[in-house]
Image (cartoon, rainbow over all chains, first blue to last red; front, side):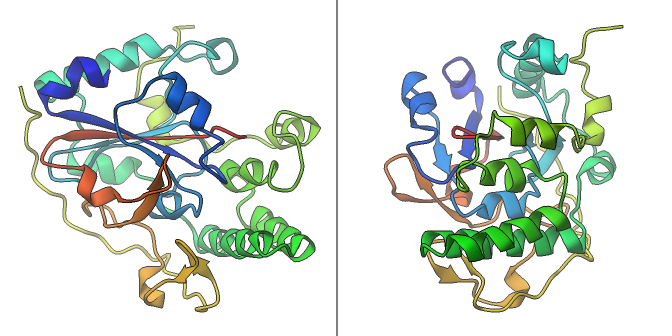
Length: 200
Length: 80
């Protein structure tokens, strides 16, 4: 998409919420990515933009402001059977936006759909930051306690809970994940606005 | 064709500011410059200066990647 639209005033910026660059490296190198590909090991951008799960896509206008807030959408149909969303309509929306401006929301609409964290959610991020710091210091037991506390404070934040699984030696596709999935997922209100689900 | 320009939204206050001790680290082992810096982006605010890393480990300022053009911020995971 960058190759298609890059000359028309558009840049995709991908942000991997991982513990090291080697985690997303196969995807970045496999795609021969030429767009900015970032690694947010400290969850700095996750904190600033209140990212609670992935994939999350945010549109940024020419002034650097959000013009279509947090949306859980996909660039391929690999997992359509699981989540029910098609990539084609969303990619077409992006093309329309770049070429005509269509799809950008009004200030009021952005404000209505931009999620904001609660105090507990912010505390969870502080607990997660402390846990990650302790983990890197080799203090795994102490780190585990703070990861647990973060999970209690923000139970629907998969960037904290599922993201911590490989750090804690758990399989993010194993039993712990399916237990987490059984608790339900945070849903952005944009989910009801962006028409990418199959009708019916 | 360039993206249509939009007026900037007015900033609104979030009530979610949480004060954190300086012992809570962020970035590359450095503390936040102040407790007030520990907060999410306010509605209507522009892309902030925030340092993350490239695949080669080089520091990158998000704000410097957005230059008067439309951008998509795509958050994903590789290892989980």
